[in-house]
Image 1 (cartoon, helix red, strand yellow):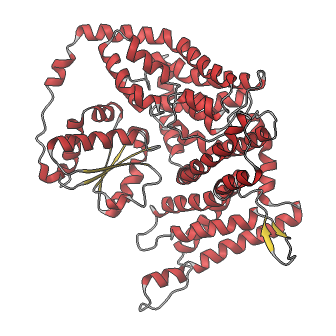
Image 2 (tube, rainbow, N blue to C red):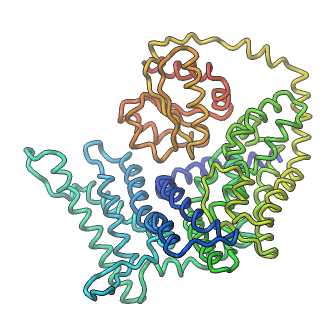
Image 3 (cartoon, rainbow, N blue to C red):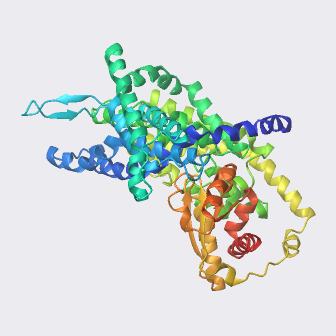
Length: 556
């Protein structure tokens, strides 16, 4: 087993390079930026459809009123994501562009939206007045996501080509910079839209359908294959495998399947509303509440085992400190605190428990005819509750939520017993308290930290909140006016300039080189934390403050 893990570790640089790919990051960060829209719109879908489970149906005019915010938010998701993807890709390109020749991310955002409408949306003539034109909405929502990514890539590369070569309209020096920028963006904007319009004209003439429709037709076999047992095993096994070697697995795998998720959940809801079986497996809920029940590796059960069954004092303390975060899908405290990642004892359950969970879910859907996920819920919803709500509050979903916990317990139990016994033996041979007392005490100078602003970044905004809260608590205890905030990497560019220090959590530490380019340009400081160090800081507010002080003092 150790040899196998060593072989996997050798591939870690390759995995990290993949995770830093600017196009994958743009897709992921584009989705993160659009998540408030998805979650907001889902509230209205829940209000409109959940009462149907209990045989209550809103009058048609009331239902239409409830669903109007959904249709004008989730219904144009692809339009919005075209813009957010382009904006994030532009920011990645700008890291390698001269400071005095940056691409305007607002302009690429708008160009991507226009370009997506050109190649993805059909024009309709109708209504009372036949001269009035309208847009067909078929591919404005989740069905158009794949096209939105491709359009964003094209637009950003056109802009990069033009800006690098200074292909622009130059204005006299006397013209204000904001006006000059407007003219500077005209050429790349025009080239992007004209190229996409020409492509759309040729493509429709040859294929007879829009590019967005053709993309969906082309990828349908892939969607079907991904929903099979082998496809599910590859997707969720890969997520766990990447995390096991310390790389945030979803950041590599999720961009490849994100579009499938939202196409499938939209289809599931339509099927359920039509009284049919919602059978598509790959959805956001399967990742968040089934495969990663408690977090990648299906860690909810093993965390509770540590907390309430462990004889090891260390594991019991780690489990109890991690139980609440893991219940809400934040599992870094247990991943790095136990640790589970790069721990040979837990390799098998960590990788295979998520696969078994998803296979069991598919069996319930395929053979017992339980509805798959129909609703998008916040990823911080406790796992078992997320399963029940997301699948429509049925008896089968309740049975599955209980059964999946039992299966995870059975899978993890023998490995838990081995590790618990090992830790008990370790505790007999060393005095952990004595080790802690020997650590050097750092004298914190409050004048260095006074009114400093600290931003902590992680993948989804959950893990970063643990350290931000610890810093706030530690600063309050010392009477220091420290300002702290938590966020997710990828949505930080617009707010980063307002902080003095940016801290990366372990799961996004491999982005540190990119972050440092941004922070150096802004004249602010940055640092990346590693696994156990980060978890220790989240649990010890005093040490968290000392850590921030040492970083700021070192670079003063």
